[in-house]
Image 1 (cartoon, chains in turn blue, purple):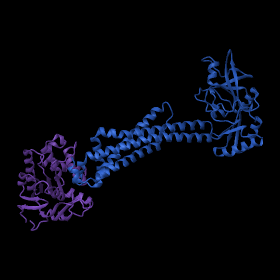
Image 2 (cartoon, chains in turn brown, yellow):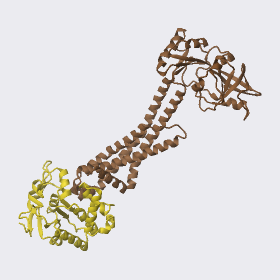
Image 3 (cartoon, chains in turn cyan, brown):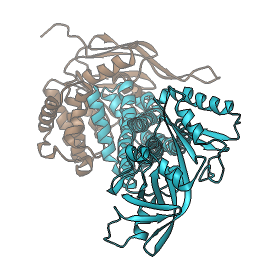
Image 4 (cartoon, helix red, strand yellow):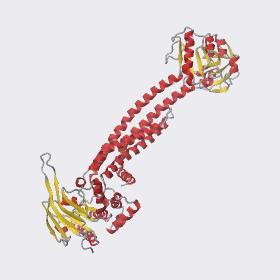
Length: 400
Length: 237
């Protein structure tokens, strides 16, 4: 009997017992769908976190004053740095692979316009911060290199500040606002942003100034944090060592500063998420095993129920191999079809879910779920199929 | 006509024992030293009381069982030491089975039932369909091609089974109590069909305990206690 005929025979048997077939595959469907879904959610989470980190710039490290522990947000604030802007400049001159250094200034201020006032953070940044902070300009323009060089008193305000200070329809760009310590001209407004910005603070209530202007305005002698850009990601370890060695030479210890590497943090977060995803998928995979047991159970029942049919097929010329393959293929078809439906449902659900959270169905999870369901079919179909193949035709034909 | 035609079935001192002495069990001698031969075109009835060894003989002729001693030849080929897969092939090619219970597949059309042995013979779908159709036509069921067994009478079911047995043009049509599950009228019609097939040159062996059925056959083999006790009307020996 050739393979095509074996598949046809299996198809007929499955269609003949529709209800039973559907119920049997249900276990596999649920198992595969949940594996696909959980992996999709896990991957989505990982992709989201990775994306957020990459927006920060993968070739940059941050130097914070004091010893920073994650979760203590905003990090570094309130700790007076034991290094100053002179140090920042010197670090900038340490040479390759350090390409750029920015000593950021952050201060709590009150911003006033006409008779309205609002509490805000003022942050001294440079032209690169727009991309670095993953920000978008809603109106006007961002701080330019020229403005930084000339410490021009022009600032970009966050969406919340703009809403609170200006009436609807009023153009903020070009207006002069009062800020603790002086006056600045609004040159741009940031797009409203969800989530948290650098240091866990809300960028919607920030006033961004050229770093030079911010230093002048606040009178800050030490930076709130230092952003160090390297030539490329590979050179981060070398650059970090140079920065640390500089601080050690200045007599600072590990308690006085913290170097945060996005890559390092990212890889530990992503491996943690990987473990969580793996564990969840493992739990989902248990239902695949249960589904497999269901198939084995039904196939055993089916073999017993069809004993006479097996005897007849043998009498008509079916070999042991023909019978064995017939039942094995039936089990495999059941589980593979179940697997396909499961992939479809899992995929569909993760699409629905992607309206709310980021999900990502990957080729390997589909392949894996599919492979497992086929393997489950083979393993669970094998014992009943062997039993069917071994049946003595005389006994089988006599079976009532 | 050839002077000496090759027998379709030849039993040469065939014995069949069951059980083993391994665990202090006893050996049951179901059949002992049975020798006979059936030539092409014969119509033979095998009779005997129940437990006489009729079924054993049927299984041996049908290649569903092997002799413990002696040798069986089907169309001149010795089968006692043949591999299972080759026996299955031989059953498919040489033997057409008819059962008391019809043994049709449930929820399957007549056409598919008759195609089944051809599937195992490796014949393509289109050819199979054509052969099955013409076989069903010859048993008078052209109007029941797509009916399932549950939609057929007992007599019709048995005729589907006969079509299934004949579709491979076997050397031997082997029937086990073919009228046992039928009323006398359908039974008579089935026996008539056997006679017609016999007249057409088919070798027929019917195993039955029914004297009336056996009376249809020109030659009767009577089995008792596992031995061949009578061979009536054997025109060849």
